[in-house]
Length: 62
Ligand code: SF4
Image (cartoon, rainbow, N blue to C red; front, side, top):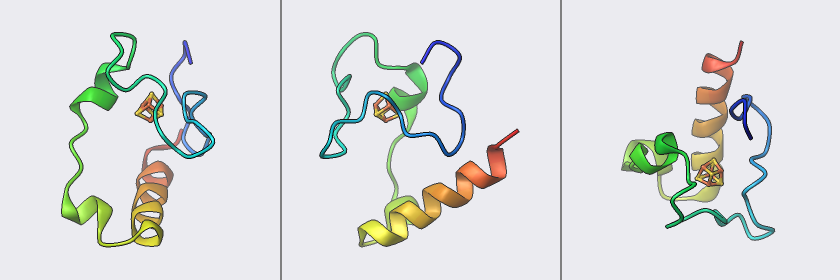
């Protein structure tokens, strides 16, 4: 995604099972490398994590 990933748009590097195709690859964006999951972000279930990420995307969209 040469112009960055717009908020609310699925990353083209996600696999069908929501893994990162670039994990461990030198082309993985620095932002993704620097993002370290925390319990506040992930909670203890997928729904919590997706809601949290959605709120971040809403707050940072243009
Ligand atoms: S970690 Fe980054 S490159 Fe990988 S799928 Fe997520 S947004 Fe895309």
